[in-house]
Amino acid sequence: MLRTLTLALLLAPCVVPSALAASEAHVRLVYDTVRAKFVDFNAYCQLEEGQRRQAVLQIIMSLVSQRKISDPFATGSQAGSRLRGDCGLQTGAVDAASVRWTASAASLSFDSEQRSFGFFTTVASLGNRIYTPEGKGPFPAVVLNHTIGGLSQHLQVQAKLLLDAGFAVMVVDSYGPRNIRPGAILFPAEVARDAYDALAHLNKQPYIDRQRIYQAGYSLGALASALLASPEGAQVFKSTARFRATVGHYGSCTVQDRPSSPRLEMLTADSDRPILMLMAELDIEAPPQLCFPLLEQMKAAGKEVDWHIYPGTTHGWDKAENNGYVYRAADGRTMTYRYDAATTRNASERMISFFNGYR
Image (cartoon, rainbow, N blue to C red; front, side):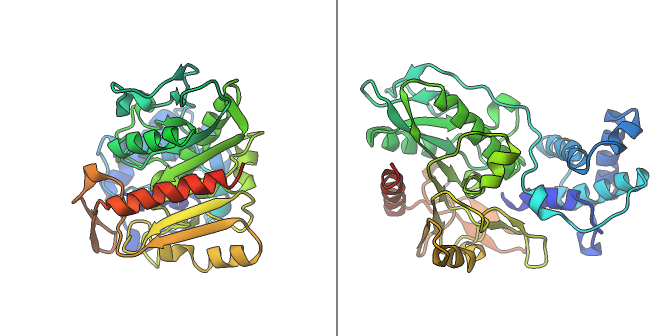
């Protein structure tokens, strides 16, 4: 699920290794779609590098959602390289530091009504709405960001637990309003920007404690949790507010398909917000190994980072609805999701305790 997230790295100027050769028909489809979108191709060439990358990424996301291309990782790279050549631009090294903040989707809108969680509350009704505990507030709040599978039953369970613990909750739906099919590509920076937009919206509500707004992410959303710990994202997305702390559930600190693939860092040493990384020992989708030695180095440097690796546990430990799903990594290895009630309970308790430690 997460392996295609590194395609934006390959949309940056780079030489495409032969091992990443894509279908010529798919490369041509992306190339032709970009050329059709920019009838005046000079207008495309005159864009800044990041803007050209975003334009190609938008088209890649659309074609993957329509299942018209099967290998966005290599296809995006080769189409982007071909387009750069048409513009007379030289290829060079990947600028991973800037690529990790790539975001191109339209902004979301959020509801301001103060809602109560009840018997008829469904997963679908949670999206981009604010639910609060009983009472007048102001309440501390948590923004929840979903997995690449979109809104799912486990988020309803987590929202209820947080409400019972006294937190207002907003579950951000990054897919539905944009007509993006769950399971399709959404770059982690898009999710981080959505979280910042949700934070800005919560800050406007009189019943929310603006000093205590937190974020928790799951899988894809956990990659955003790592990004949100860095001050750079707030600068890029022009956010005057920051989350008090973030928690990532079965995420990782780096996105990488294979040892030979480009690395895209999610968590970086410049992070200045408390972050808790909850990870699974047997996870091959978001391997905890990619967080080390970084987490230990950050801890030694006095950063407010913490982590816990659950032994014998897989990715998606709280998703009873996905129990038995078989994930296949880019290198052919497989992992079967196993729902673990004890781990789910402990992870929720650790999250709530962590948030309460930063008032």
